[in-house]
Image (cartoon, rainbow, N blue to C red):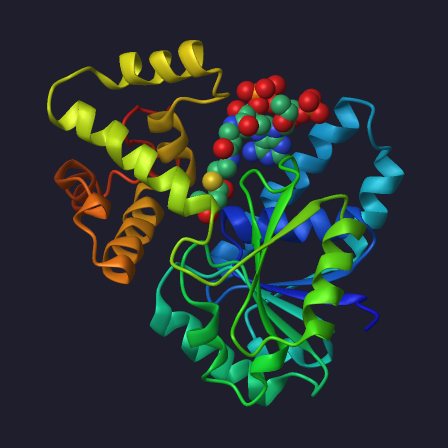
Length: 283
Ligand code: CAA
């Protein structure tokens, strides 16, 4: 299937990064959110990122203007009706995703592929609320989306070979490397990454070390580009907690229990960079 028009649902950090990546590869993008302010913020983040590329000499002002002509901002889901592909990048809540996919089934063209950027939830379960589960797939980008080369591709039980082939080819067209994994909680990326982040939070909780020390150990000792606590702040502590809950419930194994300190930070609204405070304070 030829994909030209893409709708991205959710204009947050991931959604705007996904929209930017498609725009830079020549696709036409509709960026949707229920909240007009969120759409405006997402659009402004894309503009800022493109200006940075212009300042670095990687893009001309003219190219930037052309790229920005291909984006439509929307708070009306019905605008997804002529898209070849819809990628959902809403918060990690199963009920939210099910509601969106149920609506998309009614709105979208019969051949539209419906992908989710979920970082841990069951693709099979999301697909089951639609009448076309063979066209539902996980297309999981990493943050910051324009920079990270991986796209984790996850087939639900009913996903067709045609859908998987199309999304694999599409990821390559975006300059990314697709890696296909099976539909289990957290897939591969977050089944490995999140327990490491959770364990880093436990070391702070138990007084083994302060956040700066934990991050220094992992950066200088293991060559990680960011320490796990800085990375948790970057991803968002609410997202980290949601993923740990999915792992804990999905596997029923106590090794995945979220650290109480992580729960407290989320209760306090200390969600990391996006709220100005997490394990670190951001000006
Ligand atoms: N958006 C777009 N581009 C960005 C960016 C952002 N938010 N942050 C950095 N960049 C770009 C910079 O402009 C720079 O580009 P050039 O090399 O072309 O000049 C490049 O990335 C490197 O940036 P910096 O030199 O400023 O800093 P750095 O070398 O420390 O790299 C980083 C920044 C790429 C974010 C690096 O720290 C890193 O790789 N961190 C780990 C990121 C990671 O693990 N991501 C996965 C998170 S898990 C996830 O996303 C999945 C999930 O489900 C939770």
